[in-house]
Length: 253
Ligand code: NAD
Image (tube, rainbow, N blue to C red; front, side, top):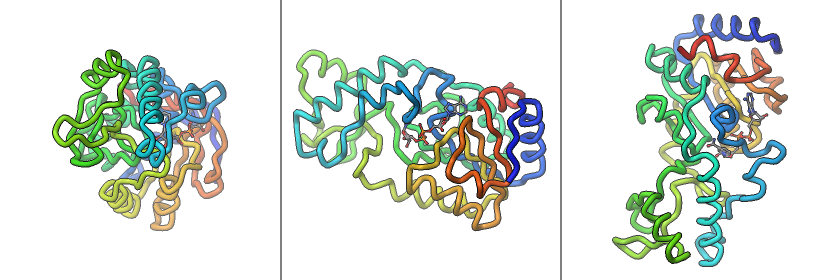
């Protein structure tokens, strides 16, 4: 494992690794979005620590907790709902457009890969999407602006206009099963790439953090781009230690 922390060397190493690869899969975590104003999960002072997501079984079982979950959701949206993609997102969008990257597996729920122009079929969302809601019973999609309007007026947690079921943001909460199709697609992508780029993840949330390991086991080179040490650094071929936006900047335009 090689650690590169000087910015020009990190940029050059990244570009060489990309040039030498044919099928790249990117795996993104909250760190790619911090420069966009979306706080990550574990950093000191993260609002996610104060406005913690409520576990799935509690959300389903307890109406008061459901209302609290929606209050927290809208408080977080006030912080980041208007966020725009950052340099890392633009660089990945360019690499998808030039067919270097075949898939982006993301743990993020902020929709910023889509906003940067990457087609839905290239994005694999492991933890869902926080920019809309769905009915847990019938699956109908519900838009947040309408839910918010009603919630601000009544304080009541939304129910489905079609079937009366519980409506929840389309994110995967702790205790909620991960989406099977996304997990299968991520597995297929990880086993069919020659370079796996893990960007901005602490790599401690499983099963998501297993995908870099699976990629390595299937012969891919593993590159980790992050500003702090991760538990998988020892398994990486190269660790680019620094700011994601700075490292990806030359590829972003
Ligand atoms: P994490 O918060 O556990 O780890 C983020 C990592 O990125 C940290 O190691 C941090 O030091 C690093 N980092 C932050 N900013 C960086 C930068 N500019 N340059 C380089 N490194 C930087 O995030 P995770 O591993 O993605 O796990 C958190 C979970 O919380 C995810 O499952 C996700 O669903 C959810 N989450 C999502 C968002 C989002 O959608 N943007 C934000 C917060 C939490």
